[in-house]
Image (cartoon, rainbow, N blue to C red; front, top):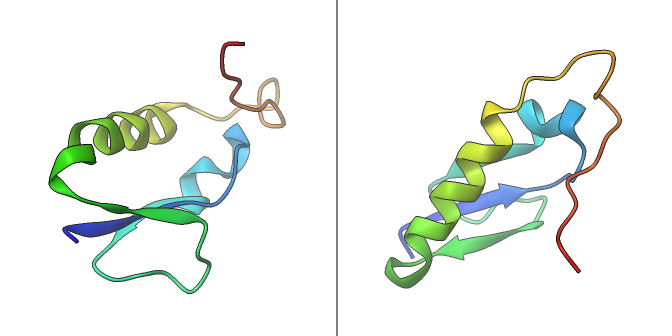
Length: 67
């Protein structure tokens, strides 16, 4: 395991505090192990979650996936 990616919430307003990288498994356990084969995908997801700016307009919006 390279590191642990914690992705605790699907809410834009909480991405700043609930999306983070740590060196071992988090006690929250809403994440995944980052291994060499999923490194790029994990960093992409982490970057997207952290780069979104929260405002009073989009704070309660959630990230949606395509059907």
